[in-house]
Image 1 (cartoon, rainbow, N blue to C red):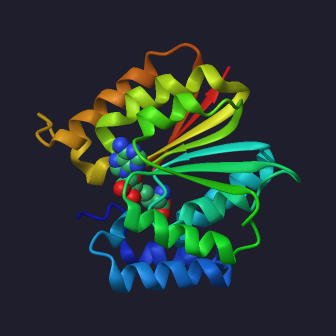
Image 2 (cartoon, helix red, strand yellow):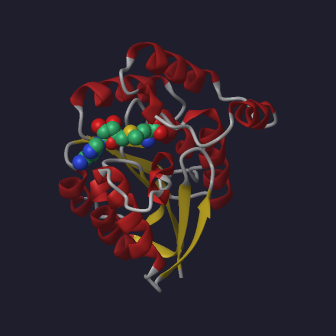
Length: 213
Ligand SMILES: C[S@@+](CC[C@H](N)C(=O)[O-])C[C@H]1O[C@@H](n2cnc3c(N)ncnc32)[C@H](O)[C@@H]1O
């Protein structure tokens, strides 16, 4: 996978960002050592950004689409308002089990609800108004997830969408990959939507901030 950010800049940026809590360092190390798709994990720099945004918003209800081994959920949970909760959705049972084990050991065990299955079926079953949503599952599903969650996002609420530069493939004159095509179509879809305002950060693989007007 192409990394967009220069290694030295990445190391420097990590050096001047907060440390990860020990449980996140453990998830990161375990996932890198044991998971064939470890590159999917948000990582320290993006993780501290997710934590920072969540801490500023103090959300009561967070939705995450794409749990993987639980790293980003625990970053987002750091900002939860007292009594708030985070719902996270994961398709793969093995990854969900790994994430649940970490959630159980974390300070947020009582505030995180993990749902195992297809995001498109589970999202409509969750009867909450979202303050913060993180979209980070299959790229071909982004437009559908966005349209499912936007009506349930509070005014002023925030959607974060990951991998919106898709390893730089969105810059190809004719985009060939299925996922890069889907991501570019998602970026165009959101750009044309006057219900929201956006800011695309060149953090890691691209993070789109989408605020509901
Ligand atoms: C990029 S990873 C998530 C990484 C995680 N948010 C983090 O930062 O550590 C995407 C996850 O979405 C899950 N996923 C893919 N398609 C899905 C679907 N249709 N419904 C729910 N989860 C899905 C994958 O199994 C994978 O674990």
